[in-house]
Image (cartoon, rainbow, N blue to C red; front, side):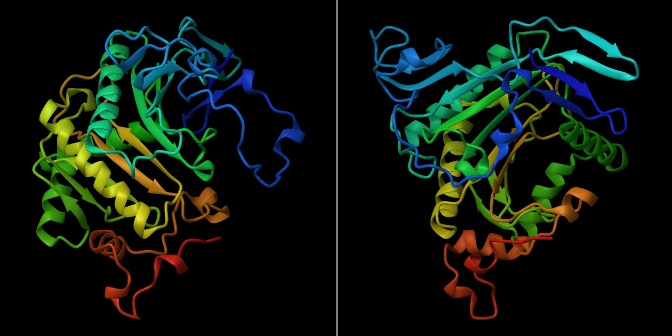
Length: 350
């Protein structure tokens, strides 16, 4: 059974996935083999996955059969298990908690070779609806305090299957990274009585230097202190702490924004591997005046090495103003010879 273990120094919880235990030989680096054979996420292989918990399909088609355009299933190899009871224990000075949670896979499309950069408007909206629907449903479970929706695109970003999919993990604790963000936003609000994310929106809309795109409801920016080249945040212009409160008209405009941003990255950066994560308020919290849900998109263009791991600092070779320019204009030639080309800044070691 998986379990949470708490680092007694900094208070970070780690998931020890005992069922995924690997031997030393499993970590030997070898060239990635060409992926062939049966894909469990393709239509006709519905019996190769756990039974679906949500599906958008043709009318009259039975569950767990063909005819769907989106499915959500429990992860066959979950990091956390929904069946487990929440149980805390100790081992001397160490804290342990049962690996209780939910781990689901959103199979975004029946098309094996599709991607967010290729989806039409309707399919992108359907994916966002599935995110919202599952978040609303899992929020009813009193054991869960936080839900993370995320996507890994490409093997270098952690995708173990080529078929396009996202994931949702619900857990009984708020992750340290998210808690730091919540605490920082609360400190800012106590000092200025304003939401720091709303102030970021206002500041960047004034200068426009880091704005990549915007519409009536959303804005995409290269954050001022970007950790990685071409890191992008998508934020709602209307203050809201919880992603699952998103409204119908916002789904439409968020779908447009995600298609635009990921399409730009696909073209400018030659379909890079990337991760995106939806940061939202904890499920146990009501409306928060100091926090603002948002999506963080991080292309995998650099290597995190010793300096970063040892200090917590990040070395970003592409200023966010230049990254925003490249994505906004979708060209590198217009920047002139003085500007670095994305092809020359995609690797970094420290």
